[in-house]
Image (cartoon, rainbow, N blue to C red; front, side, top):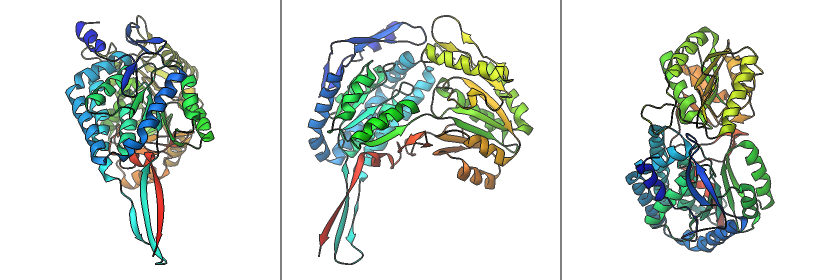
Length: 484
């Protein structure tokens, strides 16, 4: 670790943030660099009691925050956006250190994640309702929107800034207070973000952060507390299902952004150069550790071999290493379990007849690295076609007809995002309508944008984040009738 990295880590708060103060707890845990296995920082390990203290603070601040002028709420978010821009190099380096993504990708996440702060700073002043006569003409209907109340926001490790900002900013803009629990693998980015929010004028109790290794123990009492009114979670479908069951007891408003198994469909009329560029972006962004990552490359038999040759050439040229090093394309996976999962899925596919065109091995030495990999000729029934890979493995299978492509693409319990490459406009519209996903990239490998509603269908979740739709996840409708 160099002096620059050490100085940055020393500037990050290491306590929980409760009621406007950084507080220590009775225990701590260590955050590690997945590229080296070395220790980065030691942070507070919150207990269930600490979690309830954070909820107490959010509840106490709710009434005053809901009454705060929308313009004031928006200006705090706008000032936070400005501070993130000023500290973008630190934010990017911090994400690379604790999560592993290459520094240029981390810088891209700063741009993307910060944009939610700016977007919702503008949406805060655009919350509207309706006013007018009822159809019978006997009175007036007033339809207004109110903040749902205190929220519990659980964020994942793979996009530690963007997943925090798109929840926190929407909740704050709507007039909701919150308790945030970042992933134990990557808590430092959230702690640094909240440090900047305090500098931007964040009132005490509006945002509270609890870091912990005991997620289930801490979350249970918060979710069961009748004062909590909203739960938002990004993570695996299995954990999401368990949280939904818990939230049902209190009939909480719930937003869930869960797993994915994205199909990437390439037709024989596609611009193959564009499809290859899109494939590299959709698969290897964030080292493949994204719910939007293309998981199944469903390529027309007429171009499957050429597509495979082109992507293999690109993947062979990728450089693996610590994300802080110049020219690195592929950083480490988050932990040993992620490496073991990639190994298992590749071994299963190869055992069923797939060809390992490049990669396919764990990288020996310190850190949790796995070679960028291309599999061709993946056969139906392979585990890699059913499970979310969450790693740098590109698996190609082929199809003959459009109907077959649709069947293969929809053959999953997930429905987050799909990608389609074709020059045929009529076919493109048919695919948009037939694919069972909440989002589609048409001749595009990256589509996430703060202005677009992010979310899926089926077991990929419920609700939307981002876009003007995102703020409504934190608002409830109120109907008032005034007789003539």
